[in-house]
Every structure is written in C-alpha cells, then in structure tokens.
Length: 32
Image: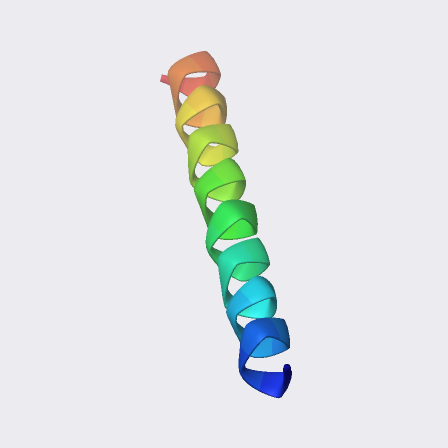
C-alpha cells in the first residue's frame, strides 16, 4: 500500500511539473 501511495505522489508531482512547464511556455509567448 505504501508503494501505491508513493506512486500517486510521484504521478501528482509529474502532473504538476507538466502544468508548470506549459504555463511557462504561455508566459514566454506573451512576453516574446
């Protein structure tokens, strides 16, 4: 069960990083 929880946390972090990256790209488009 602990392994499953760790997997969920890692997945959530990956998803968050992906969203952050897409947001950065949008900001760069607006600034560029």
